[in-house]
Length: 265
Image (cartoon, rainbow, N blue to C red; front, side):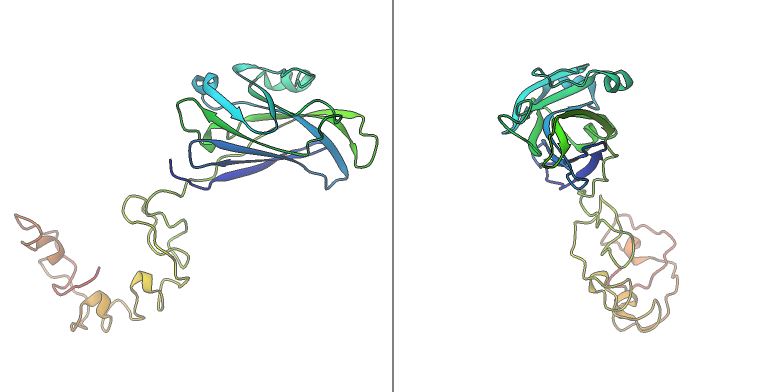
C-alpha cells in the first residue's frame, strides 16, 4: 500500500475537548492521536476511546497497538466497557447504541499516569485499512480527573461526537491535485499521466510544463503549429495523428483538425 499521507482531524467537544487525528500510515494501518485541548483552562486524564467501524465484517479482525494501550475490545455493536471504570454507559450509549471498538488508555485516575495525549495504531489481521473505514462514524472518549488546570480535578466525563468525511485520495497516478489552472501542470486525469512538478506558472506564457512559448493558438506559435509552419490552424481532410499509415493499419481518418506538420499536441 502506498503512503497517501491522508489524515483527518476533528474535536469531540465538551467541558474538556479532545482532538483526534487519524492518518494512514502507508502500510495498511491507521494511526490515532488523541490530544486534550487545554486552551479553555480545563484538563483531564485520557482513559479510553470508543468508536464505530464502517465494515461490520472486519470488526472481529481489528487490532490496536501502542505504548498507552492497556486493553481492547472489538465486537460489532457490542462495546461499552473496557474495565476499570473505563466505560461509556449512560445516555451517550443510549443515543448511539453500543460501539464496535474500544481502546483503553493507561490507568483510571492520575495516581499512576495522567495522559493528555496518547497514540495507537489500528490494523486488521488480513486487510488494509483506510480513512473511509472510520469516516462519518460515532466516537466517544472517557476521561477522569477532569477539572480546571491546577484545580482539584475531581470530575469525570463521557463525551461523544462524529468523525468527518474522509478527504479525497489524490494519490492516483497523474492527479496533480489541483484544478486545470495555474496550480496544476496537467489535466487531472488519474489514468493518463504521471505526477509532474508544478513550476508555479499560469496556463500561459512562462509555464514550460504546459509547453506554452507565449504565442497564441494560430500564427507564430511553433509549439502548436509545427516548426516552420507559422500558419493558421485549418482542418485538412486527413489527420496525420490518426491517419498516418505508420501509426495505424489500415489508416484511420477522423475528419482531421490539424496540419500535417504538427510536432507537439
